Length: 56
Image (cartoon, rainbow, N blue to C red; front, side, top):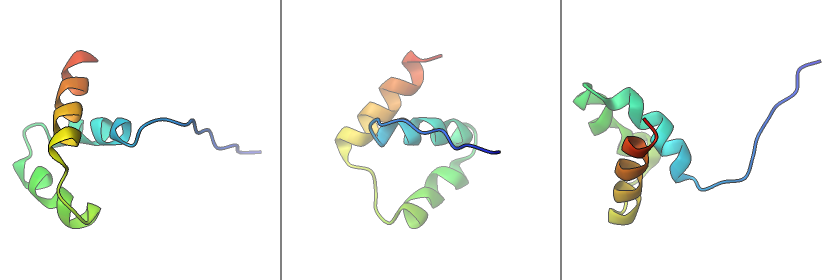
């Protein structure tokens, strides 16, 4: 039987995980808002950037 795992947390955690795919791929970074439906807010972008670098 397959089980799905999830945990509560801020949505920005998912953005951090996805943003690793953007490194060296400005096309993906540019395309993200089209799929997401909006630009990241200043606070989301700051959190994404600071979290990404602090977890490496």
